[in-house]
Length: 388
Ligand code: AMP
Ligand code: MG
Image 1 (cartoon, rainbow, N blue to C red):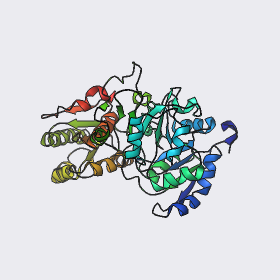
Image 2 (image 1 turned 120 degrees about the vertical axis):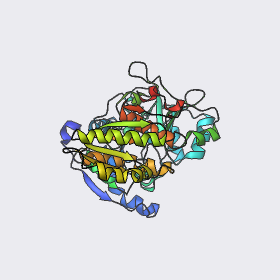
Image 3 (image 1 turned 60 degrees about the vertical axis):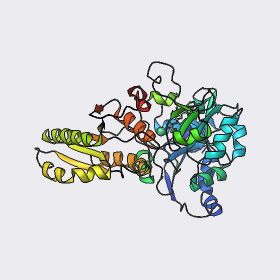
Image 4 (image 1 turned 90 degrees about the vertical axis):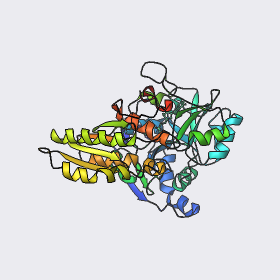
């Protein structure tokens, strides 16, 4: 397993299934083989509470190189190092400020990633040459048991082909990664459904680089002056968080995001979908339960209207429950891709609470294809620049 990559050939991906509700001891025992693969420099995909991760030993350059190769990830996009115990932090970060300590005490284990000054033990390949490192302690019992059993910090980006929607189930990982990684641990669905919040603790005030599973409002309860990065992360300038430069979360079909007052959004989705159907396209709608309900009679009447067009709906949860929408978001994109739609139209959401992470993913998935309709919320946290 620790041979040079060129001698290893193409991995055959081993699938193991574990029950996340088992005791920690039982999980650690069941994950013994997966832990050995990690220690030997291999790659293992596993569930976390946010999305599935693709793990490798963070202290082993060759394991880290295998993660980048399997994903086709640009080398300048650093990885998050996952730990299972607070004690491991000291060997990863060279210092931990009182603010960082307070956030870790409050939100770990959980979906919060802290950017801290890097220790020398972490290879440059993990941090893409930066002098800071991203660290998180996941709360998912399978992730925690695997890291503990491996006995090493685990570098893990999302377990998807780079640029694609993140995987929230073992099926998603298998679709993207079978034959590219050594092992997949199926431990059921990742329930939060969007990635961790990434907060830079090396600057003052702390800055959220990527909104995620812990909300801005929750972080401000601990550090009220926390700010959110908007704009400035464009393609040309030095990026605050290198990953933001790259294409991300993109379904195969082009996605259009409609922003504005709800009724106006629904009208816009109808007219764009009807136009697509008239042109013979398969149109995917990434919408809430409420919008799907509003559209259902109309779709029945309009769906057969075009020469060969069709409307396919992926319902991703209630507009009134952002956690449902977050949890269904990437799965909805992947279902529409599997249905081989030619284009997608997505509804937008209030950018407060978890809505900020949802809108960030939707805007980046749309990659600038934003349709603004009447009554657009003037929320500066989702400025157009923040999707570059
Ligand atoms: P992913 O692993 O795809 O969920 O993405 C990890 C995110 O964390 C990316 O947006 C990275 O750019 C960001 N990240 C990781 N390490 C650092 C770091 N040292 N400084 C700033 N951002 C980082
Ligand atoms: Mg990712």
